[in-house]
Image 1 (cartoon, rainbow, N blue to C red):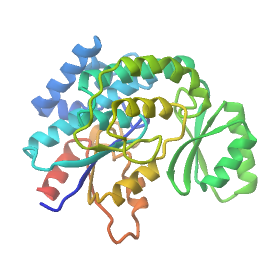
Image 2 (cartoon, rainbow, N blue to C red):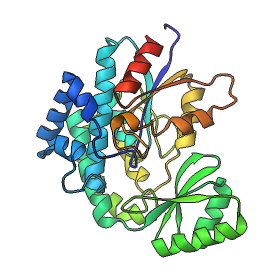
Image 3 (cartoon, rainbow, N blue to C red):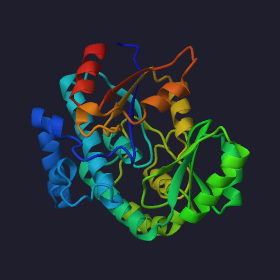
Length: 324
């Protein structure tokens, strides 16, 4: 596949679930090693939190973020092992928290440094943030107008007709009531988060996180990494990367622009690593978090990338069968 241009994709919060990673952990030593390494780095049992969640704490932001980064990197390491690293990434991108996974995969952050950063990031977001989030199935201009009317902010631009807003619960209630009047055929959905992430409600968390970012060890990535803040590739400058990650905390995630930028840069294969969605309780019943957005973004395109996922044993086996 000499003409391949591979983009690695990593999901963000909302793709965690009790039992995440256990199927791969039981089957592959490299996954065991990754989870054990994560536990040593963080000083608590990441396996127990991920697989069993005995205290029902996986959805706390301070825990969700290291759980997902661990699963994502375990999936990526496993894929690289199973393919003998024959597919060389050209770029990586991650949604919100997933941007840290993308930076780890590109070598801009060590696994240890990445875990330490997202643990602290999650703690600050949970402690100093407030509000909730609502996904609106309307265009950005309409979502922005509603947000401005109700003291809310745009938190993510996932598709032209799928935008997320954040605000206090009472403000979101008023916003959705107004939306129902103006757009009776459009729907929205409340997201399970500890705060209005990527809006002005995260400014205090970002202010406190800045010094953490400035002290962290970054290096220039070995391949291009997309920035949620700009929607374009990160500059090859560690200080610029730090600044973009700081800005990302209280500005919208420009995910649709990230995907379009990846396509424009020539990505013809996209593989998503980690996380999972679905009402089923087991890993086998989960589906990839970003698949629908990726496919809708490139629907009708003459150069739509091939999409694969590595989130559980079944998806790993299917991806290996299709790619190799």
